[in-house]
Image (cartoon, rainbow, N blue to C red; front, side, top):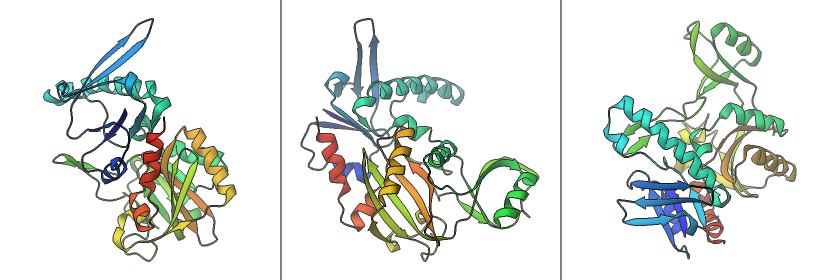
Length: 315
């Protein structure tokens, strides 16, 4: 059996499971409820999932492949009925079990719950640099005085979220208004002290590149977003229907560096964002461990959902 962790509105998951030739179960964290029974003794470990009050029972021994696409994974449903202070405490217990579960099945899982939940942009920038990939000059600080020198050198800066962009719950959905990226060339509106923030040199871009990878296969797309109103800083903030994207051939040298970076990050799938400047230098920006690729696949008739499906069907 193939076990898929996702959300009910995720179209990528829907397209992948269409025509899936092996038995599977799709768990949508925004709709379904999981109860677990875990046993550890000297002879063996067992993990059983009871979905929706036992409507579906899944013994982990019978699961051959797992795809962590998105969602919160396992959750303590009892804790959701408690006051917030107790809810947070008991959810920590569920997080421990989540981490144990996904570590237990890591050998047959594509995607990473822990990497998605705890994505560390700063660490990933460091790993990219160690892999001989250019990164934008970066400053992390909470001091205006410290930032003044950095701005004097680079003239124009962007400020980015250290982790995920700001988001909020609306009904059963998580809404993310924008990428959270801002650009500035002066510090007039900055207080002397502020919350710890990530700043980078503004890279005047020729185009962006989105690279989807699964295992050691890389699929790259050039994104000509600089002329799209609202997408000059980040293609995610523009009108996706107006974006022009084309398949892009990465150099063998770049692929070699990306493979080294992927290995150090311990990821078997994901999407890498790169910006190319006017001198054709490639700068690593970030990696998304859940691997967003659908719009690029559809716009260029690449059918990457078939590649994910093929991976899941392998024994």
